[in-house]
Amino acid sequence: MNATLITSDTLTKPAPSPDKFAPIARPKKAKLPDRLFSDRTYLIGSENAFRIGPQIRELELQGHKVIKCNLGEPDFPLARHIADEIKRQIDLDLTHYCDPQGILPLREAIARIVARTRKIDISPERVVVFPGGKPPIGLTQQTYCNPGDEVIYPSPGFPIYESFTGYVGAKPVPLHLREEAEFSFSGRDLAPLISDRTRVIILNFPSNPTGGVATREQLADIADVIREKAPPQVRIYSDEIYEDILFDGNHHHSIASVPGMAERTIIVGGVSKSFAWTGGRVGWAVFPTTEEAAVFKNLNINYFSCIPAYNQMGAAVALESPLSAVEIARMCDAFRERRDMMVAGLNAIPGIRCRKPGGAFYLFPNIGGMCEKLGAIEAYKKLPVLDRDRSSPATLVQMFLLWRHQVATMDRRSFGSIGSEGQHYLRLSIATALDDLKIGLERIRSAASDVDGFQQFIQEGKHLC
Ligand SMILES: Cc1ncc(COP(=O)(O)O)c(C=O)c1O
Image (tube, rainbow, N blue to C red; front, side, top):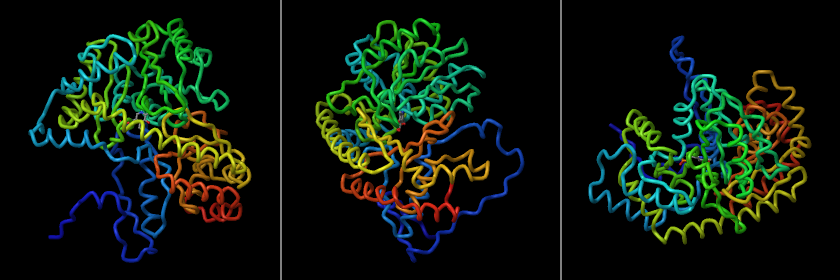
């Protein structure tokens, strides 16, 4: 029998192809029986950053070098001191079931650090550890919302916020962030969205996909509105997973630090971004009460029992070792250098306008002029209705950039599609080496004036959606 050995090489490098330019066979779609899936199954969205992986791979198998500006994953290795701790714990055989709420040393470390940085009291009993910062998003909606209850979330925002609303039967209420307001918002923007069905209000600073950060004053203003308009059972879900990735002297502020807000706020963080450790699958939430933490612990028991204890010990070291600050500073310096180069370069391309983000590692350029010049807006209008529903002018440009110019980006619709019509933006991750970003920038520059290439691409209609 032929066994395929999976090594780290297999995972990162495209498999060698006997004929680089041969079309790769797409798997045949199975004919499924009717009513195989529940209705609910059709109501969940996805995260396109993961979904375009196979398309990138197809191009790589054809011999292309794709510049990957699609991924929300720091391109740095896991720091030595963290990796060593994980290995040490495996050697100590910390490889069995453990506390479903998260092992105590990690929950203590989280409680200590979140309490110190937010200047609030936190006990480890209010902390729950999850496999990443993503799972508490859906679990929170599921826990606090009955069908018809409302979830307010930033748009553009992390796609999973909107993705889960339909799945849990909640009503999505996007809070649209405007470029003119630096992709932040005020209490005045939030106030009209709060109704007596509101159960969860999601905040995300520093933000994915815009890199927007909030000032202390902004958060105090938002908190005033919440206090005035939302009853105490409404939960604020404060996704602070990018808290350490800040530039230009910005400091991280949490709404939980505003007086009266800790009692309503779920503070969420994780190791994926701060420690470049997306594969560790360790995230956490600090709940307002131990009773709420107990509910989420029970969900953990039901869904996955626990998170690998050796990774949790690694996460405790990541949080508490003084060596981590040095690594984070080095990573932020690299992101800042890339950001400055890319923002200047993008703004020099006619038809593109890009703000300088204060945090995270994404750029969110307005490509309205580029869409017009290429004819993407007209091309979009001519699409068949069904394709139009799944697309936008920025989506066409995203596909054109990928298939014709080999730069992987994400379109605006990938960050909450409800009410995104007429917004022409792309998200570019700068978690890619500076030299590759320079190549990517050049490719975007030539794509921006490749009117004939775009028209041909549309006529071929091959990779439109
Ligand atoms: C805003 C935001 N929240 C949560 C997550 C999930 O992170 P994790 O990999 O820890 O699940 C991400 C990842 O991209 C994110 O951007």
